[in-house]
Image (cartoon, rainbow, N blue to C red; front, side):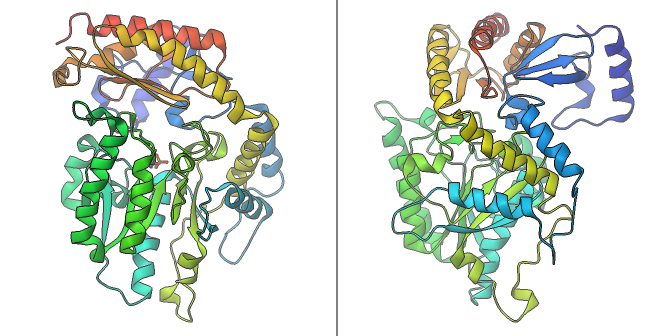
Length: 459
Ligand SMILES: *Cc1c(COP(=O)(O)O)cnc(C)c1O
C-alpha cells in the first residue's frame, strides 16, 4: 500500500525509531507502518493522500476529531502567552480554571463529601502512580503502617510504569516484569462475558462482588486502596460489567476503610455514555484518575481528583508528610488550555446528547455482525462497541494463540481505509465523537469484511 514518499519515510523511520507496543521485527512486512501527514475530523491522512478512518480515536485519546480548530487555536494562544512554568511555588490560570471545572463536573454521591482537590501529572500511568502513592502515604501519615497492599481486578489495566503495572493483570504486558512488581491482590473480574449459564450480567457482577467481600474480610486491614476501571476493562478486551458491581465495591470499600480509586483514564469524558462511568452506578470514588481524552486528544496530561479528607491527611509541619511527588511538566499550561477548551466543546456542541444518537446508530449497525459465524459476542457501552471473535463463534472455543486473527482483520481493514486495531481477537469501535453516518456505515461494512477475511482459514 505504501508508495512514493511513503517508502522513503518508512525507511527513515525504521532507521531511527523504536515504536510502542510493537515487535519491531514485524515492521514493515507483517505489520504495515503508515506515515500520517495530517488529520481532519475522524480521518487520518497519509503522505500519499490515502485516508484512514480513525476508529480507535488514536489510542482512545481523540474526542472531537483530529486538528479540531477550536482546541488548536486555544493551544496556539496559550503558547504565545505562557508555555510552561514550574507548578511548585507558582500558579497559572489554565491549571486553576481546569481544576475548578473538573471538580464541578466530577461524580457526586448524596451524603458523601465531594472530590475537592486536583493533582496534575503528565500521562495516565503517572496519574495512576500518584493515586496509589497518595492512598498508601495517607495511611502512613496516620501511623498506620499495616496498610501496604492494593487490590485490583483480574484482567485490569492501569498503565505500563512499574507501579501501574503492579496493579495490572494482562499477562502480555506484565509477565516479563513480574519480578520487579509490587505485590497486589487480584479480585475476580465482574466481566459479563464470563457469566455462567443462566447468569445475567448483574448476577455475574454480584458473584464477583461476593468474592471481593471475602478477599476484603481477609485482607481489608492491610489494604490501602482498591483500583478498577469502571464499566469497561478496555485494554483487557473491552470487557464490560454491570454497574451494580461498582455499587457493591463502594459499599465494601467503605466497610473496610479502603480507598476506592476509579481509573477513568479510558472510560472518562463520555466514552461509556455518561461523562464519567461512575455516574452509571451513582457512586463517587475517593480518588479519580483522568487522562487520554482530557485534552481532547491533543496533549498529554493527567489529573487525579481527591477528597478533602485525603488532602487534609498530608497537612503537617513535616515535609515528609507532604506529597512530594512531582513531574517537571506538572500542570503544563498548554495541556491545561487544551483541556479547558475541550470541556467547553462538550457544552457548545451538546456532545453527550449527540453521542446518545450516535451510539444508537452504532447499536443498529453492529447488530447484524452478531450473526457472523465466528462472532461470539457483540457488546456495547455508549460509544464503545466490541466484537469477540472465536473459532466456534461461542465463548468456549477461542482461536489458537498463533492464528493471529486480530492481525489479519487489522490488515484487511487498513487496506480498506479503516484503523481497526484489535486487542487479541477482539475488534472494537471507539471512534471520535464527530464520526458521521457515512463513516459509521464504512466502519460496519469494513468490520464485516475484515472478520470474514480473518476467520476464513483460521483455527
Ligand atoms: C491508557 C490507560 C492508562 C495509562 O495511560 P498512559 O497515558 O498510556 O500512560 C491507565 N489506565 C487505563 C484504564 C488506560 O486505559
